[in-house]
Amino acid sequence: MASVAIVIDYQNLHMTGHEVFMPSQAKEHSLISPWRFGHQLIAAKNASPPPGLAEKFELKFVDVFRGLPDVEDPHRSYKRNLAQKSQWEKEGHGRVRVTYRPLKYRYDYENRTNDWSIPPQEKGVDVQCALALCKHARSGLYDVVILASRDTDLAPAVDEAATYRQSRIELVKWFSPNVRHTRGNLRTQTRVWTTSLDEASFRASLDPTVYH
Image (cartoon, rainbow, N blue to C red; front, side, top):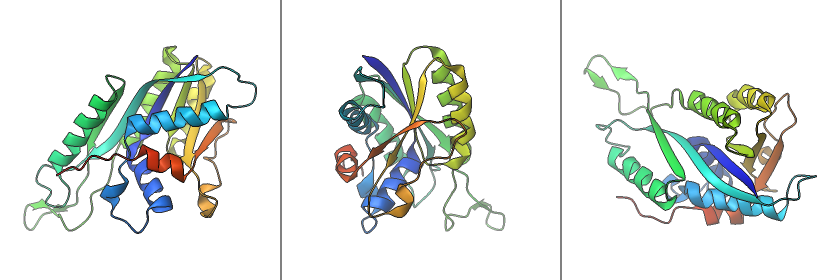
């Protein structure tokens, strides 16, 4: 069995899936369970492995990175995000790790508080994903390390991780034949295998938990 670690850029994975498969529904209805997603990916890989690889794949670890709302943000629940982290790590039985980085808010100097009317931005999550990808690729613990993100800023990290030759580096993406931009792959200098997951895999990856 080939051991697999997955590095997930959560916002990218979540929002890409939402836009492709559930654009008319609320974003909270398209939350992805990292552990369920991982098993959908492994099932797809075992059903259609990369050329020349006959062995089966086994999910060992899922490393998730996402932004954390401010505790005072009236629009984005800090407690709800922490509840999601707790649920996802519990579901993974020690094989899922969720790492947060505080979201960046525009500061309202006149009122001496964050401007809650402007959506915050993720800062540094892509760097965390890049570091994790390279770390897992060099660790020697996994036969395959897969990046779940369409962020083009991560292409150099993919190329760097591939040079270590300790693990096979791969990518995964959502794919719909009706959505043109899902057809292409992340542009890297190194040839990297990309697994495409369809709507059935997306819906099987959804987190059914209702968070309050």
